[in-house]
Length: 209
Image (tube, rainbow, N blue to C red; front, side, top):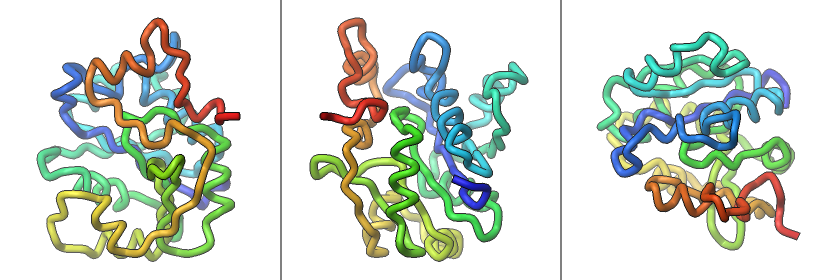
């Protein structure tokens, strides 16, 4: 991927419907959602990994110096009620100047190196690129330098990142990874993907044949 690519992982929500913070849900026997995601970006060669989190989550993530196993910058959002657009701006403010940047929510842990590589190779502009599978858009989204600038300079209080990106005329690319639209917000949704009988059919790790 190269050092000119950053990533921002949004994890500042209160996870009210889940009942516990989604960043700390188990992805497998050894990794939580946030460890899975930061590990994938590190493995892909991202030059900068930024996690936007609430003050309460930051305390939990700092309990162990070895929690991530790779360099991660924590950006604390003390006003998570302001929404995801505010969290994204908070993270993008820390992105190295001149970098493009992936961003995604922590409640979709199915990002994989193959997907990141495909998106980067498909990116032809300086706006934003959104992956689509079976007609459904998802994450991660790749932001170019010009799009990062537009987001940082925007002074309106947008409630939805999606609306802002759609208005900007994004690029779309079809990908063979069913996990990209996932949003794991409730215990029921978690069990759907990670229950005892689940085979993770929607995971990015194994593209559909």
